[in-house]
Length: 341
Image (cartoon, rainbow, N blue to C red; front, top):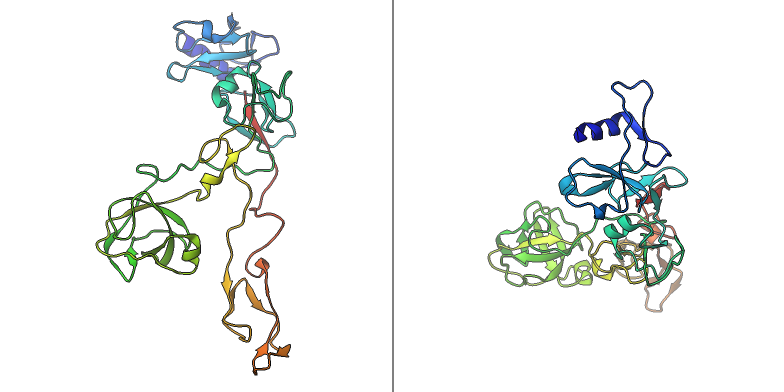
């Protein structure tokens, strides 16, 4: 019977402003009134039955017990989304059951389900705008995430066995080049050797790739060496397995609010940056051979150095190679990020 009640509640009805009253839609078939029992905190219930629906007067929301999934909040506007879910919302204000993901500090007791879900991953509540009385404070408060003006990025753990798909080597290294068929990597990408063997590389160590072709890589010991095409010496049979870093600067991530998560953990923050641009010039007299961000501004010599070599003006500007602005960003549109409590 309880399963039927849950199905009917979800499909045919809605919760009205009256605390524990179920009001069916007009015209529905086999309608009934359903009054959920009230409890002061679902933690007071021992061995609840799967499908039980109650009004939790401690949090002011309806909750249903799903067994393995535990208690799920069924408050208006929140649906079955668990506390801590982030909603992308096109309206100007967050719907009922959600608060703005704006870094505000809330009392842990005021949003118990949300605090249980995110704890102090986004800050211990000692900073930020006050979301409830007595906050911000390092005692009894916590921060919601501050996603204003920021793009969200899936957590990227440090490469390790079983974390990402391995890119496997084969054959034997020649001229410091090694076969990694269909590797899909780009120049300067950071990788970590996970297992296997390739003389010159060490398991657990990071390298930066030099792409020879779609199936062949060389390795450098730094990004600068990769850009300079300075290869690390490798030789012998190649059984190495490597993984690409999905956030090569993950170690530099900082807390979004005071005493929140850092590094490659949920809740950490990373400032904007632009991928490094580079170029080269053969000499100041040359009319050709300038690459990347370098460009000859004039083909006429502006003065003579006394040795018969013409000299020309030159400049460095990223806009020769990329669209530029005051920040690095993709095309975007504003929305509100709201977090379920």
